[in-house]
Structures are given as C-alpha cells and as structure tokens.
Image (tube, rainbow, N blue to C red; front, side, top):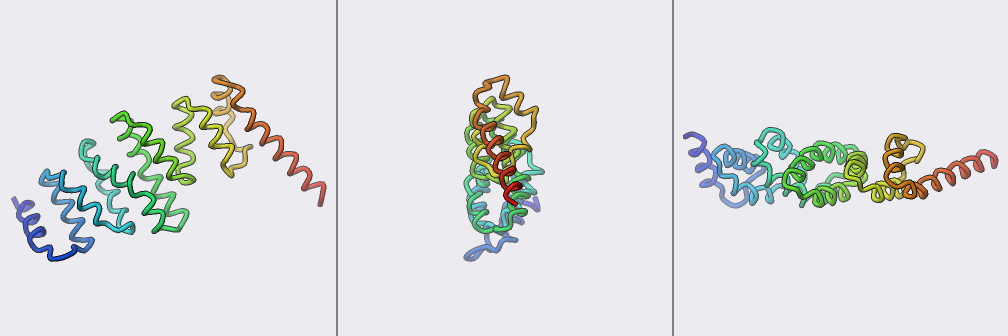
Length: 193
C-alpha cells in the first residue's frame, strides 16, 4: 500500500536527525500501518515545543493505541513545564490531557499514577485533582490540598464541604480555622486603615 511505501521512503531517507515534520509523519504512518510498537522511540525525539502534536493522536486514536502517548506525557510533563513558562498555556495543555489520562489510568486500574500526575501538574490541575480526591473518598488529601493552596477558602463549594463533613467532620477543622483566621486578618486590615 502507499502508506507502507511512504513509511519505507521516510525511514530510508532519514539521514541523521529527522526534523519535526518528518517525525510526525513517521509516527502517523506507523500508526496507520499498525506498527504501534515503534511509536514510543520516535516520541522521545520530540522537543517540548512539539508536544502539542500529541493532542491530535490522543483525540483520534482507539483507546488501545493510546498507551505510548499517555506514558510519554506522564513522563515528560515537567519537560514541557520547563519549556513553556506561560501560565495559561500550561493550564490549557494540562486541561486538555487530564480527561484522557484519567480515562486511561482508570481503565488499567493505576489510579495512583493518575494521582501523581495531577500532583505534578498543580496548580494547573487543581480543580480536576480536587474533584478526583473528593470522588475517590480521599478527603484528608482533599482538605490538605485546600489548606495549602492559595485559593480563598470562602470559594470552596459548600456541597464539597458537606461530603467531607458526612465522611469525617474533624477533617474540616483546619479549613474552618483558616477561614476564621482569614476573616479576622481581613477585619483587622480594614480597622487599621
């Protein structure tokens, strides 16, 4: 088929290092010709600025073909953060990949890796991670996440607080203490003026 011919041509003519366009074409043709096992080594030749190309495959591939892409993003997210310094671009990148990562890691029953990925992606994964902790019954970690964040505690959903309260009300004490201290501090600032 023309796909195999093009793949053979690309692989035959790759003298030295391939440019990003050749790498992407090579990965795409490997997927189209069912040579998925060769994809991982090519992914590692991508530079962090090229990681966004992975979003195409993540979005369009069958679930069983996602493994090299999900593992690559999991292993290289910090490289992307080192490259991309813009907060909003980082957040957009993480927000795009999180649902796919969650689905993949839940399917293979490795939620601990998903949780670690969310931790690595903080603060960009804050809401997603918070929801995951709450839904997983990891209420102590959920409280710790909010306690150590810079989010104003008034903005915590009362529904979320009720879920933790029903599970273990004493877990909320640090949050309530922080809320009270914050209110006192703000009131003192206003009186000082």
